[in-house]
Length: 332
Image (tube, rainbow, N blue to C red; front, side, top):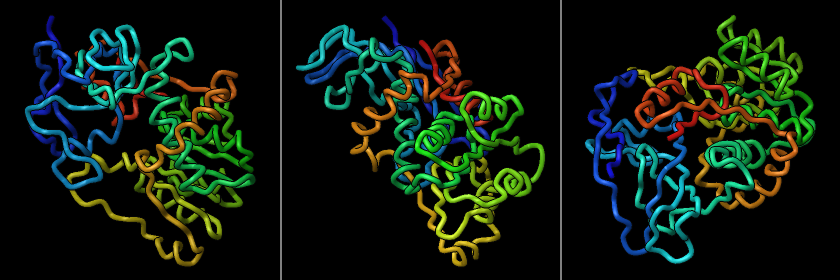
């Protein structure tokens, strides 16, 4: 058997190009002591991966040139050399961008395909879901009655942030997205009180109209113009949760910061970044609370599914373009 896997050949400058990557055929690895061999069924592609393609120092090590990339994946164990995980079990792990992976058992988490579709363990019940939960409730210190604004609100994280805020008693939930279709989804399916297409006019004008009394929590997936507008709209002691800044991931020059940062002082705002790895202690609480919401249909989710390992790169580029609604998943 052969194994296909994506390698990073060169570090992209600006938008990633096809020649920066290669789909390589290798032998299927044999599991070593304490390892399991997983046939991946679903792969995750996420905006943060763009940062790992750069050599710049960050919170996670860059991808190595000439070697297979990494990312969330869920699959079936086809060989086991480890106690506690048997052939036929399904596991969540971090060795995506490939068809087969030899994974240390300590880095594999068993998941139940009968409890929820396997793909959800990469999204609504996985890393993106926990990011939304921890970012809003712990980092954003959300409390009942808060008004919440979410940028990139039709994405995997943003869509859950808005719905969790609504389920927890927000006074108003506002979202921004990049198309009229996504705006309609936010209001009609996800229950946002208001939403706007950021391409239809200045963000600050549309946000002021959607939130005339200001906002208390801003969940940022975009950065740039959105962050500046949110700083201007945050009420006294408001909180800004910085989860992503996709608007500048492919910039080749330094990106100007918000021009109204004096508002942080005047309104005693708190601006804090969120990395999901800091909040894994919330995983049991997250699953116990969000799982029933998903099962009951109270928290809805969408997935954009791309078929085939050969389309993994295009799926990733689609995330950067904003092609996805909800979680972008590659099905093998």
